[in-house]
Length: 308
Image 1 (tube, rainbow, N blue to C red):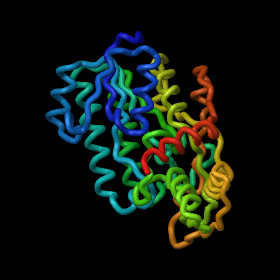
Image 2 (cartoon, one colour):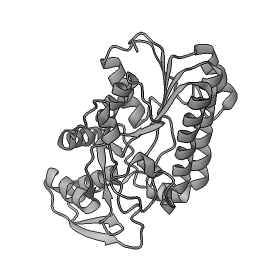
Image 3 (tube, rainbow, N blue to C red):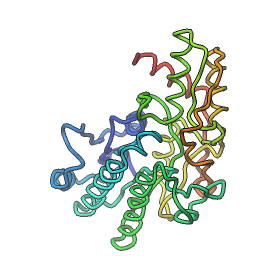
Image 4 (tube, rainbow, N blue to C red):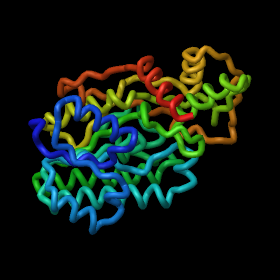
């Protein structure tokens, strides 16, 4: 694939999409097609179909999605399943109708069962019940993954899915009502230090383990696999490492040079007990994981400081 090919990047203003957009431009891709939500509502089937038919991109990267943390997922299951299914259906089917041959759907490690064997291999999908708090989002992502798989087989297309772990970085969501755990911890700890508070409240037991990946490293992986012929329907991308929530809290307190007394709200859910991806298949293609936790933290914190 040359850098002159037309690429439609859906969701370029989000955390993941903006990181991919940045990397594409740095790598010399000049024909990048983007639209804001006001310019193109991806929930609108007719407008999405017409847009794809008019522009006929060579490659579509589907980074647009409704995403959020445990609280928002559990509270708004109707919106998570409807909006994600609608966006995926419109772009995947619309791409097929427009003659697009190449598409990447960006998914989530939430597709795996709640008590999945660790690390989570691609073959473990649909091997058990999903985590209850985010099952609506997970079901939508699984449906999108399968849609890409079936369209590829039936119509001889290169529609593939990439599953990242928890991502963080610039343009992350720091709203405590809707954010994921890591940006929430950054905000809580930083504001506690700023306001001379002594306590840190954490949902659940703090024992749940999560795999974190800096969003710019994930964006590099997306560009890497755009140039590969992937034989599997989907592949995992991550660091291959996981730590507990309390480990991340202590790490962030150390980085921000503050000591807080941690209080666990055990009335709140932990979510999945473990979420570490097996990345052996991705490595077989020559890709190597990057673990930029320190660098990623500094960039993310500086971005957050500009928002407050």
